[in-house]
Each structure stands twice: as C-alpha cells, then as structure tokens.
Amino acid sequence: MSDQRQVMNFRVRAQQLDRAEGTLGDTAVLDIGVQDTGPDGGRWALAIRGVDVAAMPAEDLILLWTVRGAPHLYRRADVGKVAAAVEPFSDADAGKRIYDAAKPLRAAGIGILAALDEVAAHLRAVVTEPTVKGDVSGRLAKVMPEPYLRFCRPCNSTHLYEMPFRLAAVRAGLELQLDTSPPVLQRIARFRKAATSDDRLDLIRAYLRLLGPATPKHVADYLDAPVKDVKARWPDDVIEVVVDGEARSLLAADEQAWESADATATRLLGPYDLFLQAKDRSTLVPDTAHAKELWPVLGRPGAVLVDGELVGTWRPRKSGRTFKVAVQPWRTLSASTRNDIVEQAERLAAYRAVPLAGVEFPA
Image (cartoon, rainbow, N blue to C red):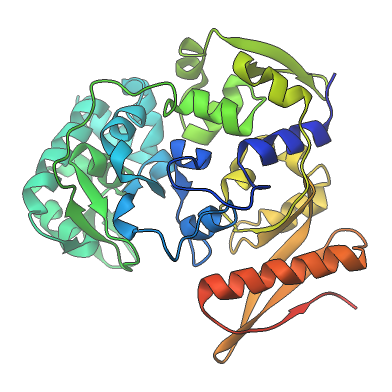
C-alpha cells in the first residue's frame, strides 16, 4: 500500500523538479510535451527543471498543437517521431478528440481520420509561408465543404471546426512560431513523419513514467482518448501499485525509483505545468476546497510546490513596470519556506526580465 506523499515524491523526481541544471536533451518532460499556455508556460516549465532558457537556442525547440489540441513544446530533433506518437489510435479515438466536430462528419459518411487528412492537405496547400491563423482559417472556410464548417456567432462568420484544424496541423507538417499571438503557422523544414514512434515518446509510457502510477482511465482522460483504445495499448512491462486502495500501474523499470522516491525542492509551478496535468487530482490535492481554488473554470493560478507537497497557489500581480507574486498558502508556512518562495519569485522575475516588487503573503 502506497500513500499520496510517495506518489508526489516520485513525480517530482521523475519530472526533475528537484534538479539544479539540465539540458533539452536530458529533460524528461519534453518526451510527453510541455504545454505552452500563458506567460509562465513552456519555457518557465523548463527553467524550473534546470534548463538555462536564456542561453538555449530557440531553434532547438518546436511548438506544435498536439495533446488535447493545446500547444506543446518538443525537441525539434524529435519532430518526426512526435508526429507519429500523437496520432489518434483509431477512428473512434480521433472522433473523441475532435469533440462536436465529429457529428456532422459522421452524418456525411466521412471517416474522422480521413477528414483529418483532408484538412491537413488543404492546410499544407494554404501555408506556403508564415501565415496568421485567422488568415489560414478564412482561406480554408472558402474551400472546405459544409460538414467541416460551423457558424461562429461571436464573430458572425463561418469557420472550420477548431479541433480538426489544430489536430491536422502536425499531419500537414506545420509548426507554430514561438511567441506569436495570434498564432502564426509555418511549414516545418524537412518534415517527415516517422513510420512509428519509440518507447521514449510513446504517450502512454511517458505518462506512466512521468505521472505514474496510473490507470488506463487517467491516461485516456489526459489524451481525450477512449479508455478502450488505451487499454488495448497498455504496456506489458508494468507492475501493480496500490494507491489509496486503487490498483494502478507503474513501469517495471521505475520500481526502484518508486521505492526510493524522496524530494526536496521549492518551485512555483505555472498553471499548466505537467505536474498539475495529472488526472488523479484528488491525489495531487486531497482537499476539495483547495482543488477548486487550483483548478477553477477560468483563470487558473500557479501552484506552490514544497518538498513534494502542493502547499498553496500563487498569482502574478502587475504594477506598472514591476510585478508582485501573491501567495495564498493552504497551511502555515515556516520562515525558511517563505524565504525559499521569495527566492523562487526572484527567479521568476529574472525569467520574465521584469523587476520583482515583492511577494505578498496573507497577514
């Protein structure tokens, strides 16, 4: 029988949140993709795992729409295998991943994977040079047939459904330019999708390695895939671990790391950091009130991680050309822990290249 603390310590170590320095090549979270949402997104996630992002060549990273249609960072050298790894497992899986866009396609007798290939072909034809997403969408709306399109009330116009657009981009060999808003799409130089991925980039194995122990449902929820498809591809080289009375799987190769898991580090996790993306939220944050605070419907805060425990939330507060970090702790913090949090806030300020005006704790 294992407890919540062992799970948290294992994940801190697996995700390298306790290391002082590292490179893109040895940063494990890049195997599953690092979500790049918000100002404290993908590169901040790399920074708190020891990567010197200021000195890192930007061209060594690539930004793609992949898991759940969200933008994720990967090593550019891996892009062909990443494209294979993020492929839907089946037509049913593809249909689940594109949500409400699947219904009109199926009603028209169009297979979902075939539809994604059709969208990808048109995307490839349209994006011959860096192009803003809105312009790409407008051109696609003129050439795609009705089952692919929806009327958008907020802008009073007809668009391609969003998820097929996003999930077809990698199939079309397209990347997103870093630091562009609205997004700019461009062709990936010398892109060729690999015939298969490998164990390192396999999404099920990567989830177990970085967010384990886990069940097929946890992984399916992370991918927006059917549980049936995930179960059919479940690794054979796993051991069973019982966490809070629930049987979960862990890669056999990680058994020793699991048994010896220990973590000592203070980090300010971004709102979409991989550590917070695990689908066993009650394991991450057992208190329901705290969970609601960390994962609201809109406007997520970041999380304060201290020695393998989530101890509160944090938000940046802009003030002119400076900013403050407002911390909302869930328990009484020692003076040394507060000092460690201030040190991490200073690290965030240096990353943002904005002066830190202070760290606010409740009186």
